[in-house]
Length: 404
Image (cartoon, rainbow, N blue to C red; front, side, top):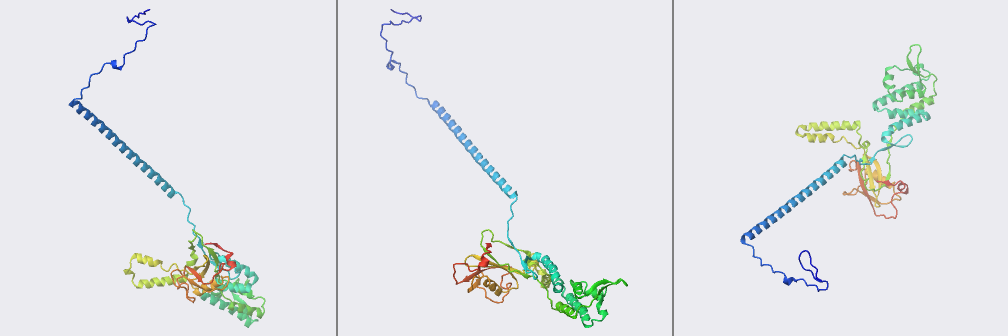
């Protein structure tokens, strides 16, 4: 059967074979394309040029943008770095700790070693304690030690001895046993003298106010023995000033990184009255030589010369094993005293030389440390041919080993 469609096309029967579709060979062949004209080619070239220009412009813009970004980044990094630096500078820093080396003095009464600034109070305390145990000796020591004016001291001692000597010569004479306190000689020679009144009391005088005239007197109510009075005179005349002595303050040190710097206390160069007088004389001599020909900088520099006058020196002796022997010396000590100091610190006697770095070996003589260039401090190397497995220093000192 044949089926007809509404479109008017004929279909095919169910039992008919399929009709193959036409292949490519049956498709229509397109007409050949004509080449572009000269105007078209010019237009195309112009379009390509515009595209390349736009592309180059974009690349340049991108490069400029990247450069700007890089510069901005660098600026931000610099700003952060500056802020960190500013913060670190403004933040409080821990002060550098430089160990200070001070002086120690030995008390002449108790023998204790005390820092020099505290010695005065310590010495007076010892005198008060000693006064209870040995009143006569301690009082005479006070007279010689606590009175600084040598002329007034000599006059006061002579006057005290005179009063007591009168009683020894004439023990029955009452006039020698009564001394008016308001007397001009007593007021000038005895009363200002530290320890003067105490000496008279120990000798046997008592300070009493007379009811009749209202005057104060030193009166000897009971005459002591001649032996006691004679002992008082002899003790007064033979006593001496008790002065604290410099403590060598011996130490053994080992080198320690970061702690090799040290600072000397002002006690090493405290200016005395004698120093000021010497400095005044030096400046007067400088003035006579003609300061008008000198610049202000030169005069200012000279003004400071001599004011820091060192009276002490810190000496360190470096041993072959790296240990340092340290001691404090007076500027007027001799080079010989350093050699003795080293010898007293050795385990056993050895032959050695002391060498200042870069200079010849020190001569063992009476040259002052000041003249030898070892004030206010000095470091010496100990050289010896002796060899030992142990340190050359004594066991007692090595046990006190500390960091440098």
